[in-house]
Length: 450
Ligand code: ATP
Ligand code: MG
Image 1 (cartoon, rainbow, N blue to C red):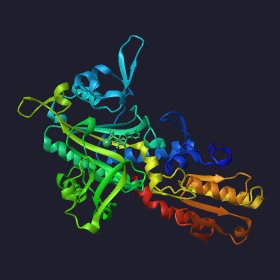
Image 2: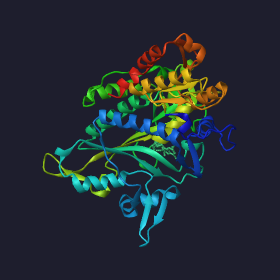
Image 3: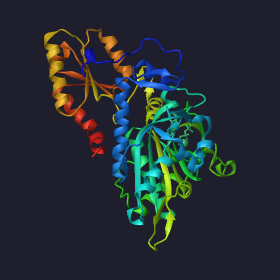
Image 4: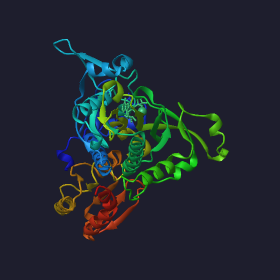
């Protein structure tokens, strides 16, 4: 993309309405625009990152054997009356009447609808196990939408639902989700710690939330500092292996890590004092096993091996796709702006032309731009007629992890400068070497997608 032809309305001033850094930087970098309280347009820069995050979610769901589909945002109230949640959900649910005075709602989650799909089409235990998911907009009429996309009213969520014959099978599905979520967040450059949590309106007492540690997080968390040493890394997991998934669950949940709803002071105090941590975290996902809570009242049953109909065991599993942008920025920024992890960056590399209009500098930039694109990169070429300082400030603000600076002086010796946004360090390389270096840097990111 050429910046001169792009739409990236960066702000010079700090917007007054933003209380936390991620919200401020998303507005300043021209990523989002608020349209009503808690409702945002995703401008091109923001939309790019949103899609990258969504793409990682899809890839990791496919790897775990889960099946993508898409359900509508609007749902019929009748389904929710069957489960009893139409009245229970309260004011967070946005209720709508159509022209025939039928009650609809903008879905805050999809347990009822997926259960309805299941009961219409699945009849036998032989069709299990089954896990279906979608990535779709949700609406929750939050009392206090705030912090930008972090607590929106309309927000994008991945929600998945497993259907199993037995409790044991459903717990394997639970563990499989835990493993796939660990991989998902690490690919985004995040450490998200599974913590024992509370079921809330989804229900069930078997649940973990995934939290990214950050001072601005809304949840208070209590944990054993040893847990922050755990990495999932690039280990190869057989998602069908009950033992392997169980082992990962045990590894990542055996140390104390809880949100305030389930915190147990006595247990916490058994951890050596120097490892006890009280901190704040951002909830970026949650997994639940809730057994037959929805399948029983809604009649989602299958014929079991003995010919008897039994309600299926279910769980649901959510990732806050749009909230993740805020969480990643909270975890990765400095006073100049965002620092995108390579896995989610909107563009892989920025090209800064120090002397726009100079024929040889322009043509060197053009050649580099074309070469990067032909090698599978998404470069952002700052080809505007601006001062170098302004171009650098923009690049730092929008946070591309790598920048190539091209100027006449370097070019005389066939050199450009490759700079890391994270530590500011630069190396002088020939344009060919710079491309080769970027290929090495991004190889793990491209490999993780395979
Ligand atoms: P919270 O406790 O933050 O209100 P929740 O526990 O009600 O969230 P879940 O039903 O577990 O949310 O939804 C799955 C994920 O969707 C959450 O882990 C979170 O990342 C995201 N999410 C929930 N509510 C919002 C919101 N208002 N804005 C943005 N993302 C949200
Ligand atoms: Mg939750």
